[in-house]
Length: 165
Length: 437
Image 1 (spheres, one colour):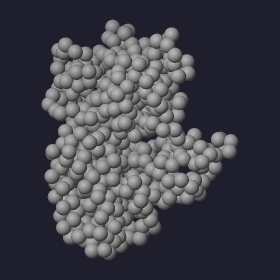
Image 2 (image 1 turned 135 degrees about the vertical axis):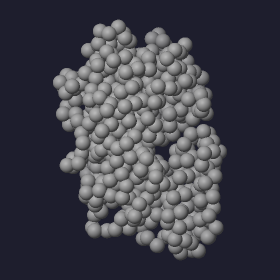
Image 3 (image 1 turned 90 degrees about the vertical axis):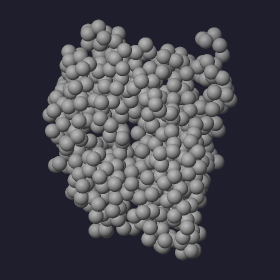
């Protein structure tokens, strides 16, 4: 494996080498590997599919079948910060829809859209497990809770600053 | 950062180490951590299971199956290795409790998994977290690493000669994977599609071996039961419903939050006292008592104890402990539609009644909510939902159908008010394009 060409960083490649040994079958590492690869590459490209298939020892078609099932895995690039607004019941009752509309206006994009500068993507998502602190938003993996349109603006401003744009 | 909310009626068992830095293994040990598992090694399998049965602990994932009994179904002899699988795919709308345990007390889950392994003779456990909980995966990975370093996990745990390995695992976004058989499929690196039962996981589960699948909260409770004794734990709750549970209060409340309360705690009190009542002096309209899958209760139905049996008697389910409070400003058709939109999105598509049923129900509910509905639509919604019940491999079909039937049954007039071009009488800002996307 080590002698073959990899598109992943040495850290990620090492992580994968270890991951496949943790389970009774190598294939168990497939879903986490896809997610970690996406974290590094930005999305599941054809090259990622090919390399993950090779490392796990399954067909590329198996990888495609699995990745199309999981909502967090994507096959196209998105913005640096993925703003995921929950509008499920508990968030809806406390202004989740309004928050999503606010984000749409503020960012000038719709559901699954990306801003032209590539800083933000926006997504309406199902329950993220922050029901008692609704309405809630996840930006990449970070939770932001008990939001109002005003505090949401602050969250977006902070991320824009982080992006340096 | 998720946190527990306090109230004088809170009984801290699961939450007893929250906010005390117990993610650090030394701190956890200082707070009586890893004493239960040492005791369990001395006790042996039969005594552990007897203690679990005495505790009246029932599964905190939603079904409420007695944990001790579940463990006792695992055959003593097995050619294939046995496994413990922790369900931390917490995805039921209104449920945000396991998050707190992973964040504040990850070692209690590890300890619970080892004890479950000792009880059924498993040598390996998997801790499955939903993909969105990445920060918790890091906490869990660190906790497992620390436990290995201390010799609490590995080939010779606590010097007892017993082997136990633990692995944390991340999902990548799928509600369906919270269902036990789909969870196993997902952990095996496949699409999360349910398996037909029998055989049940206790006999043929993960990698074909006998498998115990428990909710994260259930397993985090286990060390406390072993330490305090099953009988003492059972005393905290009501008959056949031992102990405490993390209740997630959400919706129109002054003080939403996660509270640890004894099983059987009065729902009305939970809303008006613990949750601080409804803001602005508005009236209560409805309560969803146990996550989005559970049938809605009317204000006159909430003077009940929150345990599996009493909520069941009231025509609903205790479910995952997610209590959603709806005030008089809520349009029940919109609420039913948003609930259905979720199930339609999450249906894995394996069983036709669920795949087609949730899609048609979403379309019908949308039509009614927008004013395009006719009288027959209401009966059709109920008829469709009733015909999904019990006709799918896994309970997702039921989870979509049961609340829908209750919404139509209990709020029929409100559905009728939407018909014949009238549309929603509640001026809400719901964007239909978002719902229909």
